[in-house]
Image (cartoon, rainbow, N blue to C red):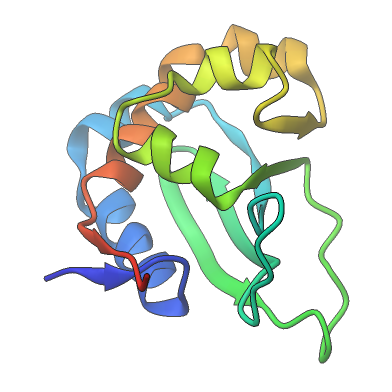
Length: 141
């Protein structure tokens, strides 16, 4: 089943994959930290749906919570990491067209939080992206 990206349904599907994937559970067994993903509109494109913020509470190989943050209704959690990118860069990462670590280093994916911790946990980061990429997405043109 394909999920609209970005959407609450996509986030829930990713949570399901993370919590059912034995490889992720093993690789991320020592990861401690929640993540906010801020998906911005692409330059020059106005969007009613963007920006959109995803929240993932990741703890020792499991996703304890995943949801879209309603910026008009609630405060943004004080997460360990905030990753921000235009929608096109997010899609390029999910499609395997842009390496996530390369995107971070070149600031196509902006990172707030301990880059040193992330670099010490590259396998966890890459496997998280693998799980996100395994959820089929559809894009409304």
